[in-house]
Image (cartoon, rainbow, N blue to C red; front, side, top):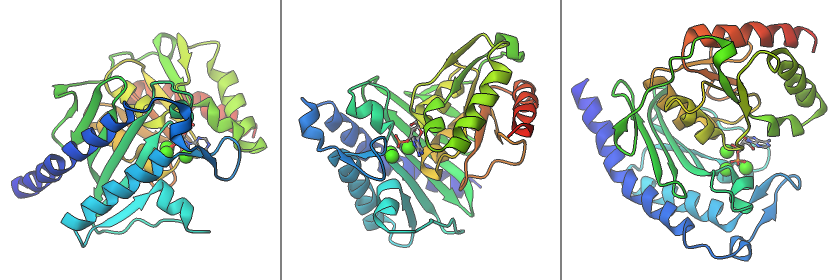
Length: 279
Ligand code: 2AM
Ligand code: CA
Ligand code: CA
Ligand code: CA
């Protein structure tokens, strides 16, 4: 309804200055020493002072304004031992303070603050901000997707042979099983596609599909905070989002294929299905 749309726009107006400020602070970092890098579960699972600081700030400010809302944040979740966040019908903010932490630590300018909102378990608002590229991606459900205020749409590529995919190979490092899955799927697509990228930032990778820089994005074993904002942005840009097994997309267990359109998605799904049979 119009009232709901107004409410969502109010959330957006409240949040954007906070996100822009938090992002701008990242631009002032002079050296890796300032980041206070820590390892969480393994040497490739990193957290910095800024991941913690940005998540805390955003949750604090949102809670102040919207005391009955719920929150799911990557670092807060990591701090609670053996805790799996559950999505409820309440308005729920899903926050990745820095997506692409590995890039961030190496000073590779492909990382972003990502904030999604669900109401009644439905994605209704998304913000992805990469301060290094000065790129702000936004979407409100049914209102389209925007990059720095300009409407964006996915590419018109419908054939796998003409497509470039952002294939998130980093996730193959998680386990032998994941490695096998990623490598065998790769085997089934690599001889046919036009190109492949692996940017190491799920939120931006999916936004790149939204604005037509790549034609597809694929990653299994992600978390809700990696994709909560970007998948809405891609959907609002005309993209097609599905679980890479062909089942419906599950925000709380994202094995995600994002494609410019259904026709292209189907061609990837067909090849992934063949690969998955061997795993
Ligand atoms: P992060 O940087 O916030 O941790 C590639 O690493 C992309 O996948 C990033 O967006 C990263 O998010 C995300 N990701 C999610 N789970 C991951 C995992 N277990 N290992 C590496 N990256 C992961
Ligand atoms: Ca992380
Ligand atoms: Ca992430
Ligand atoms: Ca993160």
